[in-house]
Image 1 (cartoon, helix red, strand yellow):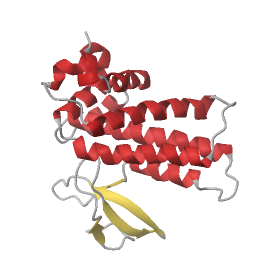
Image 2: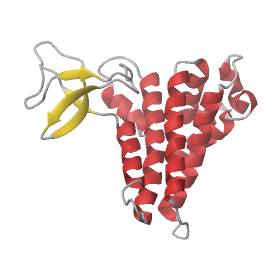
Image 3: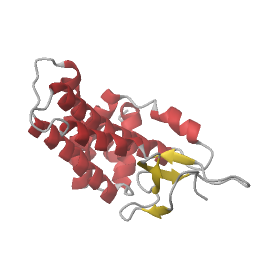
Image 4: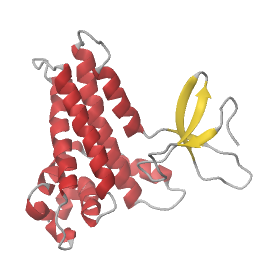
Length: 219
C-alpha cells in the first residue's frame, strides 16, 4: 500500500536493505521525487515512511552547493559545501556505530540518544590512532587483524574533512576554491564507498566502538 499521492514503489538498483543503504523511492510526491524506506509494520498498520538517511542528503547538498554558481562561486556556497561534506561523513559513521551498538526493534529512541553522545574531538583522536601500525593503542581489540587500507582511508578522510570544516566555518581569512570544495567532496564520496567494503569486518567494529569510547579503550 502506498501513501496517498505517490506512484508505484521500486527498489533502487545499487542500494540494499541495511542501516547505511537501502531505500524505496516514492515517485512524485507534490511534484518531487522523494527517497524513503518503510519501517517495520505493526498488526493492522500501513507503511510508515521515513526520509532518506541524513548522510546521503548532506552528500547531495554538498555537491549542489559546490556547483551552485556556475561561473563565480560564492564563498558562502563553497564553505557550506565543505561543512556539509564533513557532516555527511560524521553522520554516516555515527549512524553506523549506533546501529551496530544498539540492535533489535523498538530502540530508535535509544539509538538517537547514543548518536548525540559522539564527540567530534574524540572521533578525530580515534581516527588518528587508527592509521597507526596495527591501530596503535587500539590493537588489543583487533584480535590480530590489521587495519584495511579502505578503513584507514575513511579515518584519514574524517580528520581531513574535520579540519577543513573548522576552516570553512570559523577562519574568515581562508579562501576556498571550487576545485578544493569538489576535491573534499570526492574524498568523502570515496570514504562512503570504502566504508561499504569493510563495514562488516572486525576492524570496522573496533573503529566504530573507538569513535565513541576511544579514551576509555586506551586505558
